[in-house]
Picture 1 (cartoon, rainbow, N blue to C red):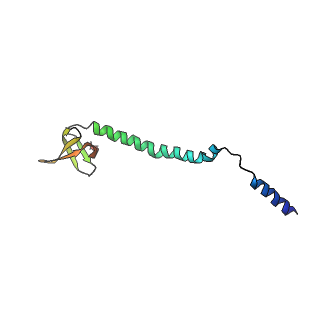
Picture 2: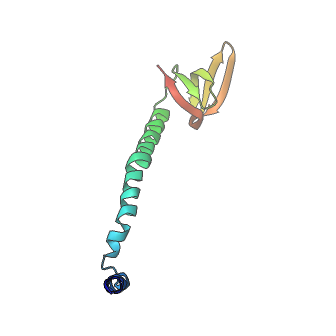
Picture 3: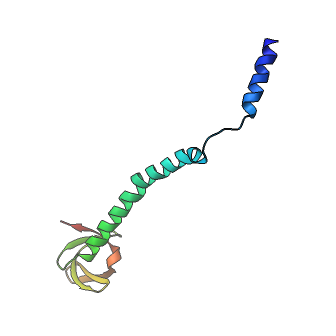
Amino acid sequence: MLISLLLAQADSVATQPAKQSSLVGFLPIIIMFVILYLLIFRPQQKKQKDIMKMRKEIQRNEKVVTNGGIIGTIYSIKGDVVVLKVADNVKIEVTRSAIANKIK
């Protein structure tokens, strides 16, 4: 008899709807997106801004590395095209976006 009474109480508790706000249910998902933004997207955007700034500020006679790994000295800049001197009498043209880093 005691068991049937406990089972009846468990059924009544299980059938009652949860009275939580819909926002509380989505709170863990919202927190995960905030953490994802702070740990991944924001630093990546900052790094991209720094690279764009570096590409705008490059000047003649600076040593740079391209995305392909070519190391050269900037010989001239013509708009979006940069002429690199990679060896004696060897000059190549690359776009500004192909420059990955400056060598100090």
